[in-house]
Image 1: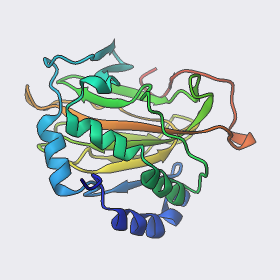
Image 2: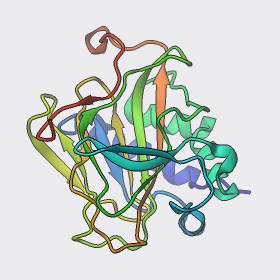
Image 3: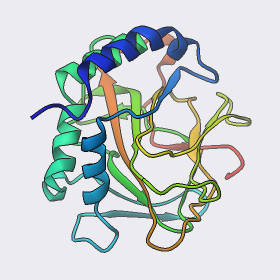
Length: 238
């Protein structure tokens, strides 16, 4: 069975996109369209769990900060979704991320701490924040985020746009619509502020669906090191 991505295309994206990734404002990032193979992403959207499905959903309900569903319990994932996550944590995909980002010795997180799958219902949102920076289980620093959007019916007005803010958390720099099969890769540091504060406003039964995976290293540059912390909320939601 092939990977959910095309290896040759990933190689081209890394080759042509590395310079832009590293120079991007407000911090290193890249946005890729049609990221997964068409037949694979169609299946993922079709089997993506719903809020009422029997799944180990974590329910986040801090209004103004984080309101969403998430699950890292891959045992309960549909088989296609579980295979996709394994592919995105595989050696070939890790090598793509290293070539793109310039960060060597990346590690996946097989436990999917904080990641896995995310789902937003009507009114759900995620305040501007910087992510936790240390994985206690891996004893490693969080370095990269990967988001892949799996909502085939997104339209302008539905909200849920990813916002990238400056490193002081005071100014929005870029807005990224959660278009179907769009992927976003970005550095994670203690000052890489982002979120989707614009509430999801699609009709009932239309959800903001995504895969969220995080990658780590055992070392990080001295200028990026901070004491271990959880999610840091900042911006106009605080």
